[in-house]
Figure 1: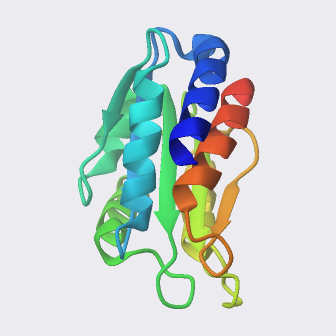
Figure 2: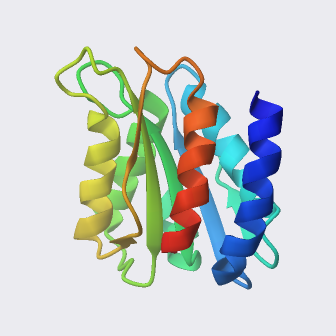
Length: 170
C-alpha cells in the first residue's frame, strides 16, 4: 500500500514542488520513540525528488537556529511526549532556539505533529514548536498535519498525503 501511494504522490509532488526550485529546505524531527524521525526521513527523501530543491535533514539534538537562519523552508515533524511536552532531545534544540531568538521572518514552514488523541494535550509538543516559530516571525504554510497514534498506526501514510497538499501552499 505505501509503495503504491508513494508512487502516485511522487508524480504529483514533482509538478507541485516547482516552487521549491533553488530553495534550501530543512527537515527536523523531534522524536521520543522514533516515529517522528521515521516520518522526517521519509519527508526529506520525498522532498529530495522535487526538482531543484536542496534538502537537509537536520541531526537530532543539533542547534537548529543556525540551520533555520540559512534555510528558506522548514518541515518540522514533532512528536509529543508525556503530557504534551517536547521530546527530550528536541527540547535542547527548542530551548537553544528560544534563547537565541533569531529573526526567522524569511522562513516558511510546515508542521507535522504526532500524538495520541487519548491525551488532552494531543500534539502539544508540535503546537509549542509552532508558537515558538511564530514568535520568531516564521510563516506557517498550510494546515498542521496532526497524526493520531491511537487511530493511525502508519504515520508515514498520513504524512505523505499531507505533504502532497502542503506543496500547493508553499
